[in-house]
Image (cartoon, rainbow, N blue to C red):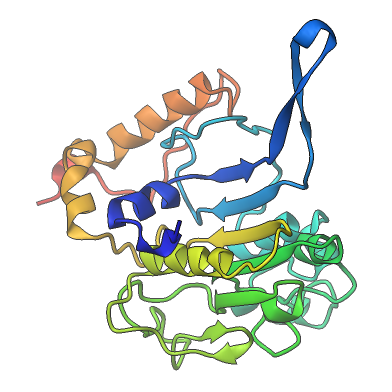
Amino acid sequence: MQYYKVAPVIRWVIASCVLICTLNSVAQEGPLGAQVAPARTTAPNIVLILADDLGFSDISPFGIRFSNYHTSASCAPSRAMLLTGVDSHRAGVANIPEAIPPEQAGHPNYQGVLSHSVVTVATLLEDAGYHTYMAGKWHLGMTPDTLPSARGFKRTFAMADTGADNWEQKPYLPIYAKANWFADGKEATLPEDFYSSEFLVDKTIEFIDSNQDTQPFFAYLPFQAVHIPVQAPQEFTDKYLETYRDGWNALRARRHQQAIALGHVPADTKMVDMPSTADWDSLD
């Protein structure tokens, strides 16, 4: 099957997943022909999908739900911990590079790029015989030795900044002169029909389809679209108009109750009112 030929709706189904693990296994027969638990005959294929700044209580993932993941207050330190399994300070990304104050900048644990003293899960899996792929937001360095192509990923298409426009190759903040995309370690140009989520899914499928052997693969797919700027295709915007019509206060209350129901936060957790939040009903 040529996966890159699937219809757009299938690509969006793939994009909606949070974590997919495909295990290759076969059933075995026990005494008297009874079926016993499948035995894994090969290493699992792994697709790790990261949704940046996503309202995690809004989604309905299948399979196991992990509720004790320790994260950082910002994106790059969280990515560093996810990919290395160590604290963001040890990984060298205790803060995002665009926001490191002078008093932190001189310390090796606050460089804002992934340290060479830590190893990524991609490197470990590559050493174990995996094909390793990455398509999406990297934001852990943009020099040749800090891009994902130098940190264990064999094929890559990476956004090196905090984010970028989702429709065009242009930055979303004035601190960037351009949107810094890289393909296999070299500066890349986006296609004319680019939309970030669809493109990144298709690129991941392209990488997987390029396998010419039976070795397992690890594909890391960190989306950028949920991160600002918020730019969704019109058909998705229209679908959720009623969801947000009651305003952000009502939405926060629903998410608060959902987080309690899912066990993400204790039942007595209180919401915090922020002075910067305007009254929805007073807006035009």
